[in-house]
Image 1 (cartoon, rainbow, N blue to C red):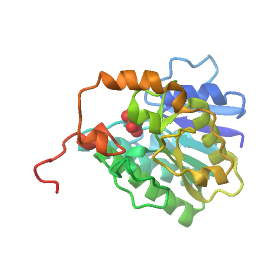
Image 2: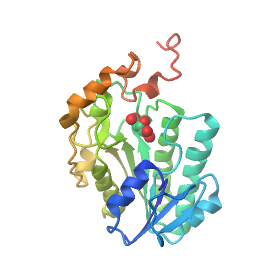
Image 3: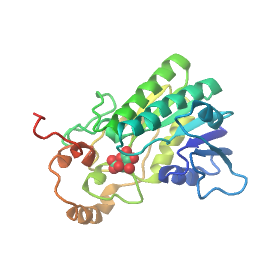
Image 4: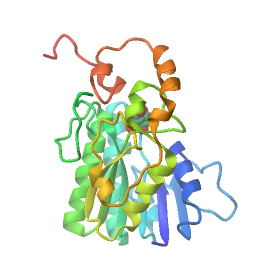
Length: 267
Ligand code: 15L
């Protein structure tokens, strides 16, 4: 794997991953609507709006691998999600197919399965249970990845990312936190492992309170180093400052579940 393009390259995760993986892949291209602030002179950058297929084709031209981080990264209005995450994701896979890209690593999200209760430990073989329009768009992206793997031979890895930060921010994040270097390890598995056809992994570190069985990732060699428990005291101190949210605390997706929640209609 020599040539890799990152969509959403100017975002927080895109910026972190490009920094960690600099030097691992000889040719890294950044793509986003806006130019990342950290680009050096001579770095490859292709501006692209994901909703525009022709622009996305330019972004992936000549690349062997795509790390698709682009799109809208939280809940949004339907037109926003439709353009950035549904049409945008379709354009990405279609452009990749047309360009002969070999592998796509798709940044899915824990919000594709956010309505599973925190008390239930789940693997990757459960029915999706999105907690938002955003979560639905991530489930759509996973389904699209499966189609492009089975029908067009792309090797696709979907990462149901928890929360990527230096340290876990609150109690829920003690379960879903992923250290940036661990996420980079998963991306490398997706770009390089010889046995990938279509696979879903949880983007989570070695957290004692994890909601997820990530043995599939372990099978492919994932050995996370981050441990959220090391930061329990500070996460719980931050949690104590948050307002009570009885719906959010029941579900893995937290506040994405309680937002717009029809308590009077849900049994
Ligand atoms: C996500 O999918 C978001 O992109 C991120 O901003 C966080 O909200 C994260 O989920 C989370 O669940 O904490």
